[in-house]
Picture (cartoon, rainbow, N blue to C red):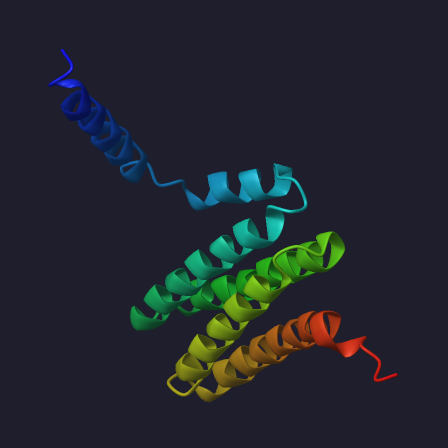
Length: 148
């Protein structure tokens, strides 16, 4: 039995990993989990939502589904704001939230260059809001130090 113990343990671990990998939460489930989570967990969960919405916006952009693109863009800002507010409130994951918001903002800049003139203004407004969140997060990390 001792010879087969490590093999059995390995098989159990692999089976667990496969079962977890096969179950990706839907966006609605992730939103519900983020809303119900503790304040320390919310920034990461809300940023996962914003990242999924960014992928959805990219797909909508590529398939010329402009109402879906605009809706996803608005939701990206909404959930980034929620992540920003949760990070500021809990004072947890501030740096990670700032980095993820910056990454989303950079991807939106790339998208902005390829959309029509009407949507460029909307994308730029979203970028401006995200940059405002980043500024507040950066200020909370570095802005209150005095040089006494």
